[in-house]
Image 1 (cartoon, rainbow, N blue to C red):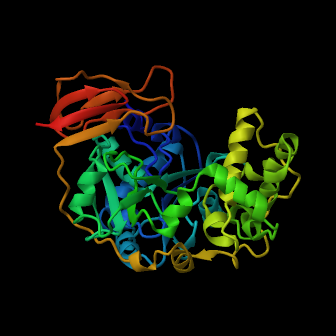
Image 2 (image 1 turned 180 degrees about the vertical axis):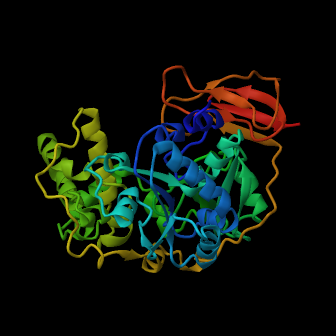
Length: 439
């Protein structure tokens, strides 16, 4: 008899929140608590909210399946209290259930798994650790939606998706995996700015792109469309070397970046202001001090909100992690006791303030659900859009494929995820991506 792990592996289920960790590994563990992450703390995105509003029973079925697989006795769904329609849908689906709703405040980053585990259980994940070390498994709600499909033998080929920002019709919808961004932009009525670019996955932690031929993957949560001249885009696209030069010359060690850091406030020894000091140190000094960036979760608050001089502490922490990893240096601990800061609750960052600081107030509008689905003639399937080794192609150019068919397989003995076709079509090319033209 196949286990849920077998079924999740066969269906290509991965973490839909952005990381893309293969779910079949998570559901093969043992834990006492499973947490559904529906916090959706990135501003302007609504795909998780719409999923919980419109598909609560299926998501809950995935949550129960995960609980049974890992032996959990407690299931918790984390969602912002302000998502009234989604909360109502979940409450209706949970009538008579022993599952719990965890209603969260409207702050960023409420969806960080360290924050969510602490809010749900009171437990603190060990520094540089994972939720499993404190008896928890955390899934994005879309991963649980896929997991319910996987239990029925249906692969992960459709994606809940939001587009917001400078578009004619901000929308949330279901799209086949593999559709190019340009098709989705057209589906939303096109851009309303002369030189549109996008942030993939959110305004704070999202990646910049001006390549509209990129495809949707299972980890793409949405697009925030802005003009290239927007101040947020200008900050995110500044060359890293320039960011560091500015920090070296201007940082006055005010420590606001540390005092408002959510991981620091939760009790972890993340101190971006000390990492900023390293910009003016010798190489040996950098190694000594950069350890205070190793526990950074890259939420971006320090760079995009806290710093009064508009410097780049998050990017300094990114560089510290990269440099130390290259030298084989891992977190060794600093002797600080792991317990929340006395002002942990009082220093939370309201999303409304964050949106204003980012210059996105004019775009802070709903992206309402539409049952219409985007159509595309040509789709591309990335083979490396997950944690682990790239998937290995199992099709050839000219081959006719069906929706749900395996396009690429996990390499033997490696961590990875299968890739399935989301449409009926004909394979046009096989490389780093598999290109399929609809039949």
